[in-house]
Image (cartoon, rainbow, N blue to C red; front, side):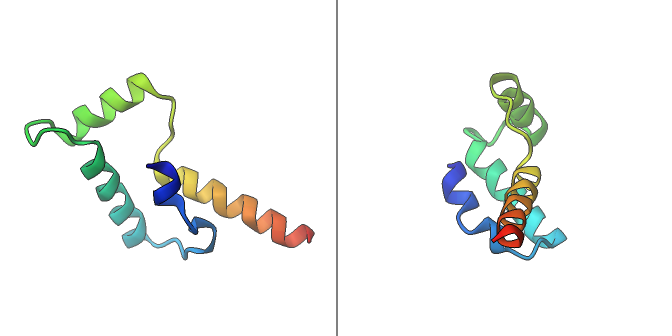
Length: 72
């Protein structure tokens, strides 16, 4: 799922709306049953993985790309 979401992330213009849309999409993907709250989904995922929130991953990806383009 991560490569699909982050495809082309280094060229995105980071806006609050984009961040909210990505967070909502990730929550939708992680939810298995409608009875589980978003808070519970995040707790379960963080317990099994050390993955940071997607907005931090996107920010890191953009900064790496910026560093690459500045040194080229």
